[in-house]
Amino acid sequence: MNTTQVGAWAEEIAWQHLHQQGWQLVERNFFCKGGELDIIARKSNVLAFVEVKYRKRHTMGGAIASLSPAKQRHLIHSAKVFLQRYPSLSNLDCRFDLIAISGSDGPHSQVRIQWLDNAFITSG
Image 1: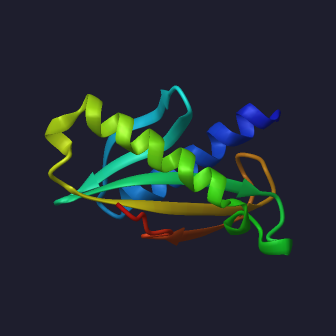
Image 2: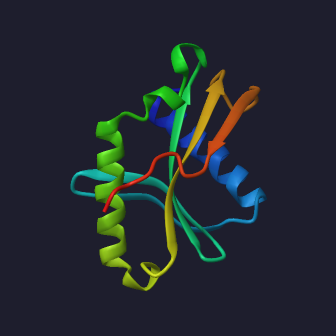
């Protein structure tokens, strides 16, 4: 699989995991100038902007270590744009989650899923 296919595969695994936990899909792959949001999901009064990261191996911090401060800024920007486009959702409690997937790439491989809710905190 190429990197685009691996990314789509990882996002599907992440979405299935969220869905099994009772989350409802709001949008996938929201693009705007300056960023992208992989998954936007809602459960009760919580709106989660979910970043999906995949690494074949979880050494050197694995997928979790890849959520850099620059990436966090892009996610925050994208979430602000999303909420401006959909103001009816802005009254929900918003948070940034990270679903980190590690393991062999492929549809029948064993993977490790780590879900960090409130993966980082924004100021202002």
